Image (cartoon, rainbow over all chains, first blue to last red; front, side, top):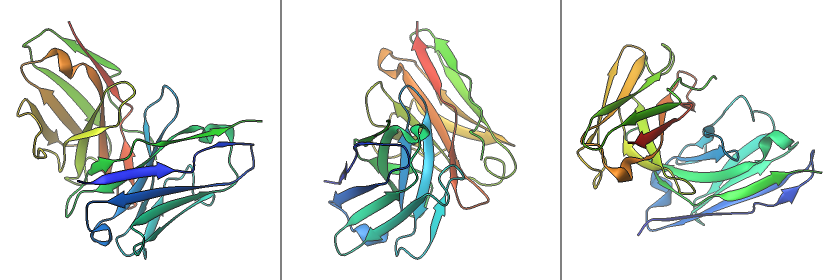
Length: 119
Length: 110
């Protein structure tokens, strides 16, 4: 059974940093590209970042470019999101999602981890 | 990257068919057959219901279908059922090798 579990969310002050983790199981992690998506309270989904299966290619939404970094450790079947220079606008539920193999779409999602940026 | 444009709300009666539109540009929806759709019930995780414009993942009801014409993709729900009441989001791959979601549509079953 495919499992995707995010962790690391917390209350952090504006200007602070946080590192999210996503631990996976039930599939061959290094076969798949992985993504981060977030959802602010009461708002829609916002795509954030993509990392290729081997970690060599990364892409970011304009809203987080230069502040967030995505990485993965295929030996630990894990995905990470390093978030720096956080603002109140980054308050959201952060989801880790698996990209479907050889096609578009995100077929498995975690339950999300909540990041609250507030003083 | 601006969100793809979806109607805020669509409603229909039990058994009816409804269609949700998702409008983008030549750099996303119009440029690639990489549109997907997600169903998200309140407080729940998004669920993939359509990928690559018109393909259904295993286990998704045949009542859900997708299509695309020009810069607009569409999700049709046939034989509307009470459990279809939910939020729906489209998503597209873009020319910058990024993805973008739609603004979201709330479906109400009358």
